[in-house]
Length: 515
Figure (tube, rainbow, N blue to C red):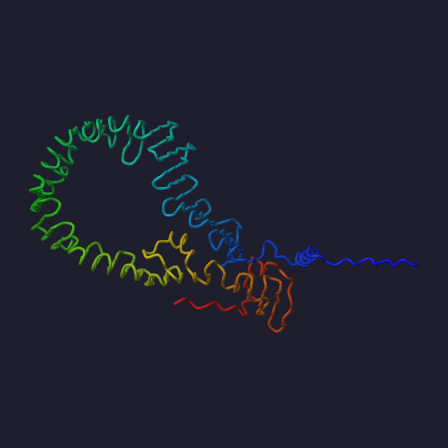
């Protein structure tokens, strides 16, 4: 009896083989590194209006921008924590935990500070010497001078500092027990600061046994005495001026005080709450009572005029500024004028903020509008820059570091025009549009993208769908044709097709200016 032999089964493609075949199909159609890939909010590498390119990740938290000519990074950020910007060939600027920290770098100076934690400065001098200084918590100061000397300080234990704040040099040990300072040619020794001190050198001698008695003096400038400070005080100021411009004043605090300068007289009681000043030579007068709630002054056209009944109403006019407040800080209306511009501002805190600025040289108009929390609008005709965005959750005035580092988290839509460059961006970068005189580019997170440009005088449109797996090109008078897949798409080259003289015969239209 013949044996029945089972036929050998033919192999069937398993899931691993299926994915391998799909991968081998896609590899020839992968997008090259120097092409656009739009997978927002995870990753996007796109060509910006004007020719630069940008990498954006995590919905806009990470940004890296490349210069179209040098192909170097000119900006990168990890928002809202840090950003770095190239200002020119040799200068850069960084924000660190904005607004707390900044870093400025140039060939001769680097300054890094994070308030109130630390500040570091380094300078390169013409002779090649390098000096630096470090100030940090908890009270550490360490510096190297340009002559090579090193000074150190640990507050309040002890140390030496030079050219710090307004001091030429300061030495101390177990502050406030002992401190010695030099400033403007004068040396002062402090014991139990601020109670006891003695000064000599430029300007003469002065001493302090505060609050029992104090004598502050600088020959030819001022001479001031106090006893049981602030109860009894007497002072003479402006001693380097003519007698009619010198000031003499005294006070028996808090009951009464008086000062005079020429024919001007001032009186105060319960200082600083009540005071009155008059100058018959100029007509100036001022009344405080009670300060700071009520203040009136005027009479002299060369000095500011004030009216204040706080918080209900205030008025200020002087130095080219007219400002009115109603129910402070709710409503403010102001007009500013200087040699460069005239500016009108209206604020209804926190809902409405707007200003309009007119340049005196060019008569161009710039403006800013914000309706909180709905939208913000900026228009600068001098720079030919217009910006519009919504919503606008920041209730404060326009601050560039806020717009740069924080608004990307909540703005659903932004659009901007700068000269002939036009940009649109949606929340997380899902939608991007970048138009200039060379091309129009629009994309929706891998699902759809379109590129319009002019090639050899013919309008050309390229379309990408489904992460670059389906792409085609349409050329004016030539029809349409499929393009090689470029996964994950859209696969357009980062370098834009220039508008040559031949191409300009049929230019791509640029969107009109934003209203």
